[in-house]
Length: 134
View 1: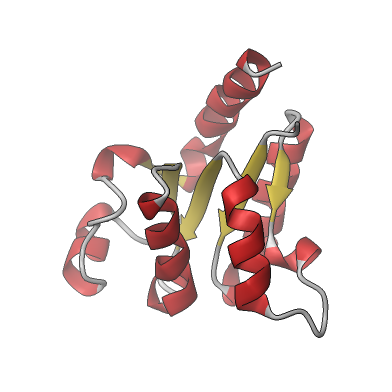
View 2: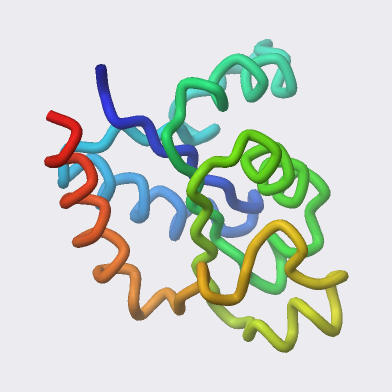
């Protein structure tokens, strides 16, 4: 079974999210990302509800744009409710910004966040997790 990773992001950040998904694929992961996996005419909420349980973890790109999106926080909350590993990737925001401007980090602990410039660390750790499941 593939090691599935849900990539959550706001529409304005889709280019960066695509690069993240490609990095996940490069280390043997199977990213679920709406850009590639949700087609015209699909019911977005049904597709997400169907795919999220097949994912082992969620990585969320938090930017000044995505942090305003209800879908992003809904996906984070759904992953939290399932007890999934969840990692926040901050770009243009700090943890303090999220705490102050977007209602806090209830479902995403500050220790589970890193800057976009540290994404390679996440990818390295992900590669190890994927290897351990094979």
